[in-house]
Amino acid sequence: MAILAGGHCLLVGVPGLAKTLLVNTVASALGLSFNRIQFTPDLMPSDITGSEVLNESRKFEFVKGPLFANIVLADEINRTPPKTQAALLEAMQEQNVTVNGQPYDLHKPFFVLATQNPIEQEGTYPLPEAQLDRFLFKIKLHYPEINDEVAILKRFKNNIRDLTLDDINPIISAGDIEEFHSVIEKVKIEDQLIEYIAKIVNETRSHARLFLGASPRASLSILKASKTIAAIRGRDFVTPDDIQYICDPVLNHRIILTPEAEMEGMGPEDVIAEIVQKLEVPR
Image (cartoon, rainbow, N blue to C red; front, top):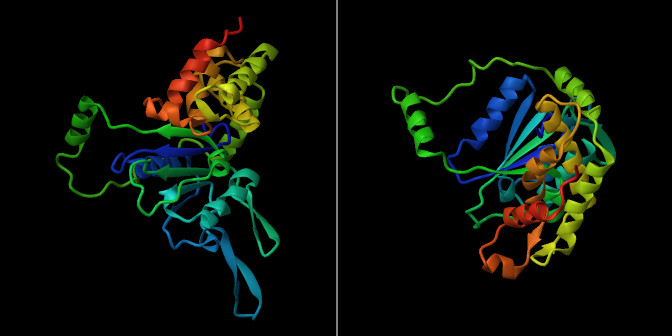
C-alpha cells in the first residue's frame, strides 16, 4: 500500500524478524533498482546523498550516493546522528537532494523503507517528529505464531546456506507503478468521508490522553492510503471501512501519549481505536 500510494514506510521490530530480507524481496519482485544503507553513528550526510569529487580533468563532478535508487533500505535508521537523519528529509519530501546549492532529482518512483529496533536504546538517536511525519506508515512487526515458526524451520531443515533472491522474478516495473498512481488518483471519495478523515485527525489534537496530535500531513496520508486500499480491494470509491483500516499505521507514529497514559500501559493504537469507535461513521 505504501509503495502504491507513493509513500515511505518505517518497519519496527526486534532483530531477526527478516525486516531486511522483506525489503530485499519486495525490491526484487517489483523489478526496481535497490540500494541498502547501513546507518551507523559515524555516517555522514554526504555518504548517502553523494558528493562532488575532483576528476581527472581537474574539474569537480557529482558522484551519486546510495539514495539514487527506486527503493532505498535505511537499515537501523535510528543508529545515525540527527544531521544524517535530516539528510533524508529533503529526499523523502521533495524527491531530490541538494549538494553545494545544486539540486539533483532522484529516481522515480522513489521509496524509503526504513527499519528500526524498538528495544535497543544504547547508541541510538530517536527520530524527531519531523522525520517520523515523512513516513506514510509505521508498521510494527511481531514474532511469528508457533505454526508459522515451525513452517520456517521445516523450510530450512536441509539448508544451512544463506538465502538467495536469484529465483525471484519481477512481476511489475517502475512504469507500471507510475500507471497505478494514475489509477489510484481517480478513485472517488465523497465529501462526508473527507470530513470523517478531518474529524479523526482533529480528535487527536484535543484528546485528553495525547500530548501531541497529528498534523494536516496525516490527514492527507489517510486520504491517499484509503484511496489506495480501495483500489487494491477492486473498487473505484472509498468506504468508511477503508479509512478505519489504515488509521493505525498512518497515525501511530504521529501522536505522542501523555506521561499518565503511558504509565497506565496504553499505546498509540489504543487511543486511535478509541477515537475511531467514538466518532459517528458516515452513511
